[in-house]
Length: 438
Image 1: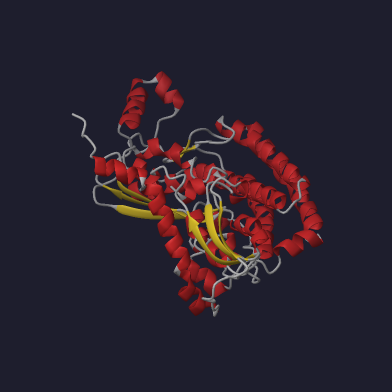
Image 2: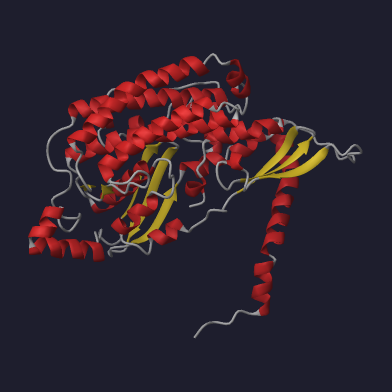
């Protein structure tokens, strides 16, 4: 029997938006004391006779906010005095959804988090489950995961570079970077059968092996785009307009970056050499040679240099992975922990039963165990915390999303800058709201 909602409940529903706005405004006004302590800024209590002050909403529909991000700012003329971020407009309850799905059933949902690098999300989730259930992944599958994660890193950084430049008024590079993304989509299509939401990783391995055509496409991309990216560096590193729009904008010191919880290129752009691929190596990252790009300036220009240099390092990693790719299986040989191959499903009764049981129940880690595993995604540390109750669904799932943690630093970056710098500052953080809102 449906539960009837009271008039009071309906009144709360319809009054939510005014109450929410009132709360945001109160927080904006209450930042005076915090800014005075942190930055030494003193705010005048005198009435603004010339009405220079203005409270302005930027987003959540504005295209320059890279999704449904709302920035409420208080302006003194053209200068941002105070800023409050309001997120949650793309909230889908992903963490609670995970607790009602089997471990493998939830994996495609990760594609929709950071949808600019879905393969990295797939691998992060599968590795967390494999750690929880103690699943050994074959060597070949680990090398292929590395290749695809680095391609996803390049794809994400290409979109960041193109859109960031377009925000600053340069349209040409936007078109060039999207040509690169088209080439990557062709590779993803050949490898997984899907261009965007790939869902190729599996608990215990991969859905399919790399074909010889896919390997040739990856090698060709890596050879061609090393020179292409270096050509973009020649164009942009000396471009006066691009430099002026980014240099000394949104500067964050190393200590501030750590205190604010920044991660990924945003953290390394402030001089903190933290990258999970070297600090806590996973897959086969400890067996390949690459460097972690680092800058100490901490501004938008430093974050640009970090991401472009990371693309070149990713290409270096891909070449090494292709040269060292071993032969062998791509999936663990354990019907209780991973899907059987299609040949087993089609041509043996046991394989068909295992496939049905795995789809229905899936892997069931021991009751009471918990695990946290993180990878270095294009945005930073992407981690999943899982607790098991002995069934095929996680009892508790929590996501450490880098876009969410990086947004913590955006308010302090904006304060004190002209309003025209907002689009550059948001772009330099590189948030994806599907991941931040979870």
